[in-house]
Image (tube, rainbow, N blue to C red; front, side, top):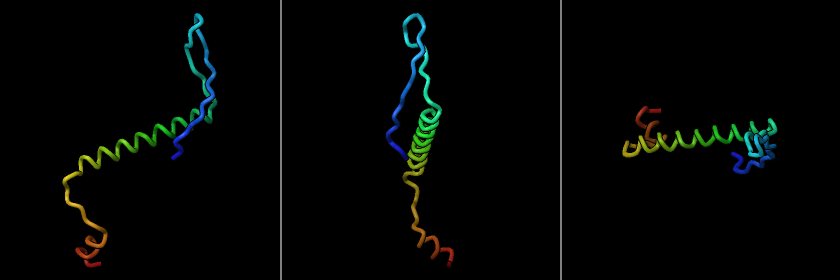
Length: 68
């Protein structure tokens, strides 16, 4: 995951005030992917918190229990 995204916005103004920021498409996609990665991390943290206190098993323990 890339932690640095360099943005080169162009600003469109209305009545002399910034109204919109326009990004090159590649920068937009990089930002979108970065946000998706952040959402995945937040989902993982929520799942880990939900599972806290639950018993944990190593793969070796599972194999032994299954006899494989």
